[in-house]
Image 1 (cartoon, rainbow, N blue to C red):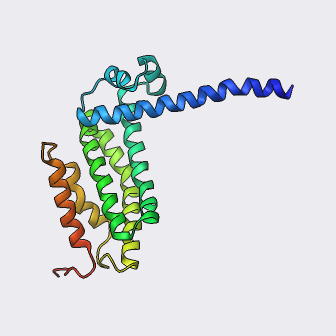
Image 2: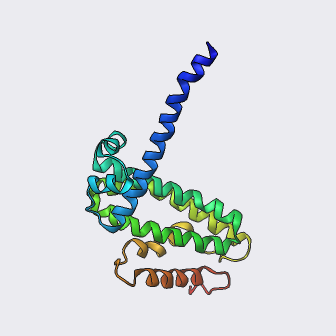
Image 3: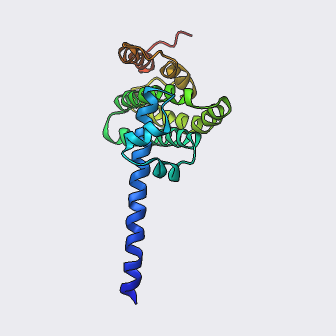
Length: 197
């Protein structure tokens, strides 16, 4: 009896794992496709993910559901990166590396903006704001405690400073310009920088 119950559970567990892998592949393909073009079709995303359209629709019944899932997944990864980077690097370096991830997120956000209605964009901005500000605060606080980051900045100000990342034109020079501007932001955040007040 116990063996039969185990056998009965095994195929379902295998299907669940397979379904999770499919969902992850769809999200990754959608992220790639939408970063290139906000007009990427669900058919092209399914093809890029190496799955059939029916599988895509089982996970995401429409385009908006898929775009929302990509955004939420990216925000979660971005927020979770902050403590992981702090565990592996000194605070100022962790902050800079997190900014690099934020730059990649900004590029993806360009594609998502074209794929979303205004109402949905406002909803997502509201959902992501608190967690992203919290991640920045964590990084800044560690830098302040280590004496690497100036004491007079807060997370919301820093988020405003790096807002160019999702407004910058994605031309041939966007990566170099983003790196340069992030370098300027980092220079302004370092301890010992005059506040200008």
